[in-house]
Image 1: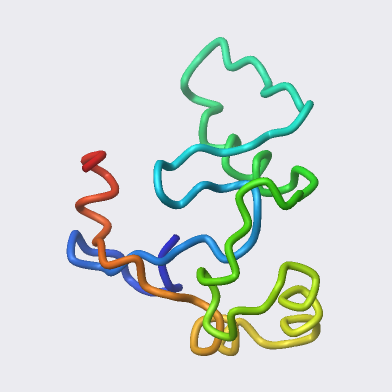
Image 2 (image 1 turned 60 degrees about the horizontal axis):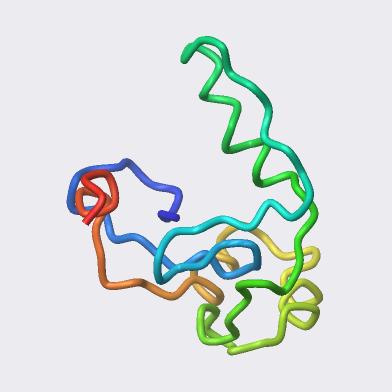
Length: 106
């Protein structure tokens, strides 16, 4: 996850502050939801939106991955009705990596 800015290889990345993503190894929990079949790579651009719309659970949630260290339900309540700027400045926690590291799978 990155802030809403012009992306460069040196753009810092952030822990995903919600659930379903294991930030340590990059695994995503999709629960009992089957991923759609993509017979051609042209439609792959829709995959991330599909994954982000899946119901959340607490499988990989870590309070340390949001600045207030709030529990999942409290985090959702905290950001309700807030601007994107609040999310970027008060919720996201840098993971110490860059977009270049993420894109190269290191």
